[in-house]
Length: 305
Image: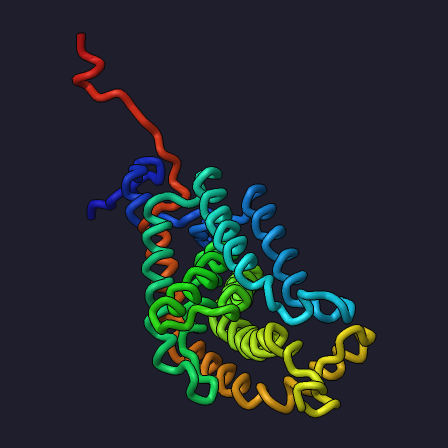
């Protein structure tokens, strides 16, 4: 009987080993989430400057004196609108200068901004239901805080132009939407159900905070002299604590009925479509290769004598 000698292990070709072992990506590459817009140095400066100006614009009535002409945003809204547009453009140009945003990123920003603008009329003015916030939250989460900042502000501006809602309230709406997109991109890392739960909780808090914050642009008009109840009215020159107390009571009494439906709808959409939308946006970011370096090489015809 003939015995067959076992094949030495050294004769197994490297090709067979590679065929039996599926290739795996490095752990660092698997954990890194693709972002279309990074927060670089120039972007941080632009966003920080916009945030400071926005906080001053929102909170000025709380510290203004009784003789201030800006106490009710009577004359600062047009200047704030022009300044905000310039600062949003500065954020985009800063990303282009840093190489983090190219023509593909600008195109994706335009598509998502148009989507948010198209969704807003479906719920605006109806008990606070506004489906556009799902685009801002998921876009900022999947594509980065800088992208989310631009998406929120540009999407709000486009929706105002689409619906004819351009007015002194628009710069404050743009700032609020930009901060929501920025915050979504700055959330800690998570995956699967934990990520959806994190986004749902953030969406609920952000939608309510947005409504409370937007009240500040017109609430200083509501004073006792205009016939508004003293407990809810703005008191020019009063202590900040007193006006904050009146503002919170005003929000809880008037706008909370619109803020809660907005939050509930956004939370529901996160659980219904969040996973699919995040996957699609991240796949689009990978295929667009926003972070791939551009290398120019000489062609064979140019190298030939």
